[in-house]
Amino acid sequence: MTTPTSFQTAGRTIRMAYQDAGLVQDGDEPNSIQYADGLLRLSDLCNLWQTQGLKLWLTSDTSVTLTAGTGTYTFGPTGSTVMTKPVRVLQGYWLSSGGVRTPLQPISRDEYVRLASTTTQGALSSYYVDKQQSQLSVSVWNPPDATAATGTLHLILQLQATTPVSLTDNTGFPVEWYMALRWGLADELYTGQPSAIMSRCAQRAASFRDALDSWDVEDASVTFTPDIRGASSFR
Image (cartoon, rainbow, N blue to C red):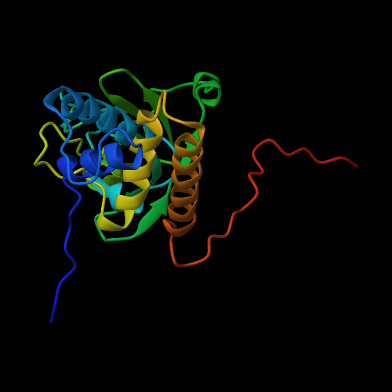
């Protein structure tokens, strides 16, 4: 039985993108300056794409040990949870010591600052995410009391994809994303080329990216529930 082969090294992606953009002829290699420039552009492209929509392979259920009276937990190289800074928090729940899950409601900064008290301890019901330059700060409300602290906070985090730093590194994207990365990079490189090449690169980059954005979703359907916190009733 054969297994899928990954050819998504940074070097291969850059070489093919230069050929697609008409900057390198078939059979030739980019020079050292082109490889260096292509590596930087590829890293920038990977970092940008992580901000656009859900990438399923980057999600992780991260468990956080709670401390009674402590309402804020940080994630980053110098955070209370030491890790590469996550891109965002997608969902959260509290898991009791008996294994029962309680979903937590995400709230905005405005909702968080309007709370009458952020120090009164109790059961967890919601969380606020403060995105800082070097870390994510997550404040839960209420801060856990002794009973809530016997459980754990679980956050569904979107992690950062590994970006390549050498030509032999993998791009951090799975094999099905190769064509989108290749033509996306070609679309970044084609400056000064004939209009036919520029048009081809732009069209293929958009086509492959759209196809993958439509594919990279959960298989099960998603049901949304209206947020009734701001609803008013009239008689």
